[in-house]
Image (cartoon, one colour):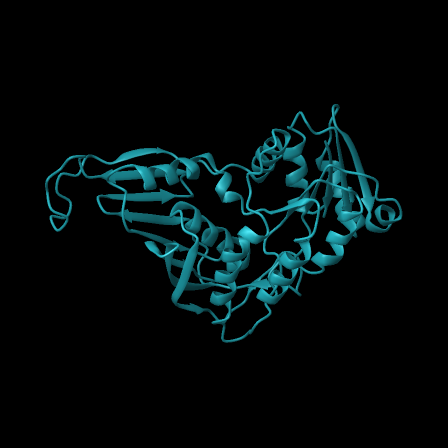
Length: 335
């Protein structure tokens, strides 16, 4: 497969590094508007098995060529223009970085725009690809002590709702096996989080409470806090009817505290018949590894990431939350 990557910054390079480990990839072309980004990518990438090409955008526009797969790793602005360019390559699969736009209107417009594409267009909400989260979802929805209403809580620092928050919203949908959500309450902090992509971009901190449903069936709720006032990272808890989970993203460990299966103690006898906590590794893979997993899926005719349409719920939830901002309305400078 020939792979096109639009955007040769850190994100694009990480995608390329993962793709270099996929045997089905024969060639990779990285395209950017900035020569220095291409120079950095040239230094970061090398391979004896995969043909590598680095092009400025005007060089690529003059002769796009044909590709099997394209990854759009550039910022959220001008996505339609970029997709038009990618369409000229006759690729079969396109991966777009989240968020799809800087407003709900932009997102819906882009989803409608790509509905007629012959290529399948997916969104890189990649926490669904973590082996550990796939296993955790199975545990939450099949093991007796975990079945029933759940509460997910996250208390972390200045990660940004546009950068990481949308991943967490999608993860809640995934773990709870939900397809609907209701923002119950929330707040957006007034101080903007600076972006490494330039002064024209920024992100937001805040907190929210959300109820999740599968059709009309209540599945659980989430309390998320991503404050712009802290550098702390990664504090998760999940409470189930007869179990509690602690996930530490820094230490890469997860702890399960579970009531003995078959216990006849009533639910109000808190902590009764609980077994000793069990700790295991819970490793977050590198972005490149997730890209490789997605590409390997495509090579086997499997699409492992949500489509544009399937990502709408997470985007709607994010913009409902962001619209509580005291400083911005409707459009947000997220990347």
